[in-house]
Image 1 (cartoon, one colour):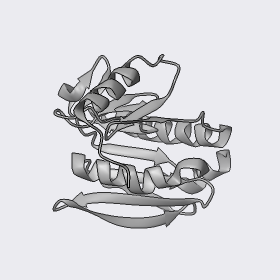
Image 2: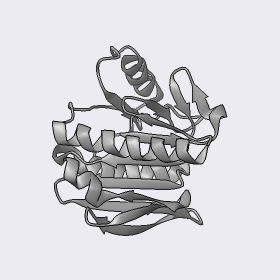
Image 3: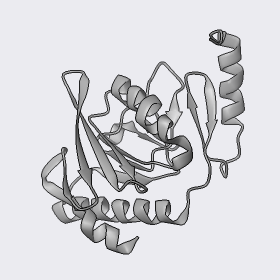
Length: 187
């Protein structure tokens, strides 16, 4: 088992993370820098369709929430430097928005799984989003065509599992469904 990092090692890693060029996608979690590979075409198409569906619904309802696609930095905790770049972030509390991205937990996060880093989304980020108090977290697996929708209730996530054949309800707006059969046609 590796030894825990010292504060100076974490500070040095944070400074290294901040010095990365904007063209490099990376996340900073528990004192570690996680470099992210460029997403493939299907991943990007799926992210675009999800962004469009959510953005259209917000505009249609005259909602005040804002939706952001990656790259968009989300610093989850005030007292820690953990910073992630979800594929989709929905923020309803505009006081969390900064020039750098989002400071605090978004209301809804969607991650699209890449085969090379599935554990990162299903384990590492699940724990991180739970600890940060993210109310709704979806993991979309385009290879298996499965969506796992986590909903924070009483400090723990409950989840529902769907397929790309389902219309999936958004917890933050019970009248809103994402029509995955329609999205699947575009992939």
